[in-house]
Figure 1 (cartoon, rainbow, N blue to C red):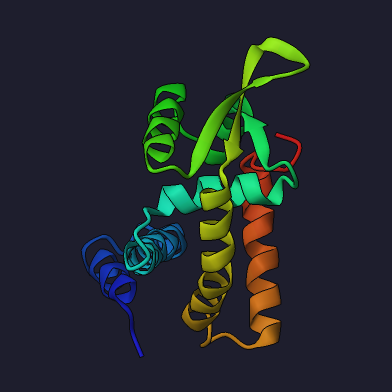
Figure 2 (tube, one colour):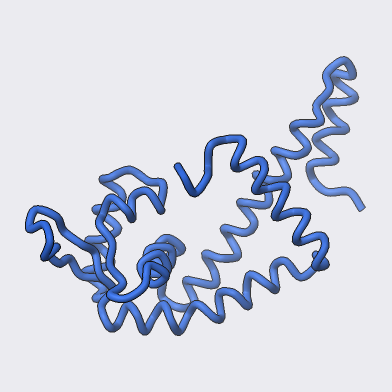
Length: 166
């Protein structure tokens, strides 16, 4: 069975047979997959009254461990957005009662972003369903295909500088 990217590659082969477009096949499929996954996840989170990015912030704080707080800078690095965007996100989540800003007892100039009890309850309630939803999205892959895909994607991410040491 052909996908939409196969059609694009066939058009290039017809119009520019001198051009080896194999990279377009991979990058195009990754891009299309990202859009489709984003749409699926957006719907999943919308049903639960959340935005994708809100869950990302909640999950980042939750997996940081008790007391479930990080600096805005740490959230910024995890979210890969601008400082203005993270400030806006924190403001919006604070208005919804999901997070709160607290002064760092060790450094009064620093502010920490902390899950509220409500934020902790929301992330704990949604996390299991989120994992199950992602498993549903990846169901066509067998265990060995999942491992191979994860390894291949990891290799590409590392080659582009996206490592845990970044």
